[in-house]
Length: 171
Image 1: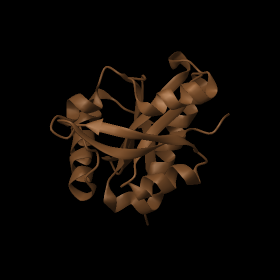
Image 2: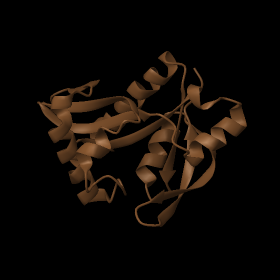
Image 3: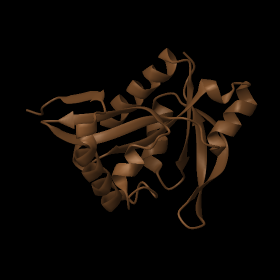
Image 4: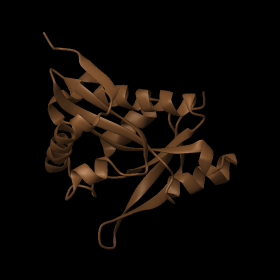
């Protein structure tokens, strides 16, 4: 029998386990494209408004965060389309789930948790998904996220990749 997945707020003691899960996901999927050199710093960025982990039998198997806007294309697109200001927008980010639990809807549980935070804090969540990340695109569309346009996701030393922008469905 599969043990249940627990989604709970990120605690400082989760940092080593979350960093290990992040580097595992990067090794299997090439995601994320940034933050892997210093995973603990990346996970605890000052721009994080709230974050959660997914845990199975005491092991961190996933993570998601809601971030303050930092000039992302998805934020600009949504602000233009909705007239929301940045105080009412949050960026869903740093979502990852280790490969061996992906058939258990852990990513969807994490995203729904972040969406609940957005609703309760008056922030419409937005994000961009790199076109190479087809499973992520399918996840957000299954959960009703709205395509708002395209942008270029910049990372590393002058690297970039095309990305599709989404906004969470309205409450």
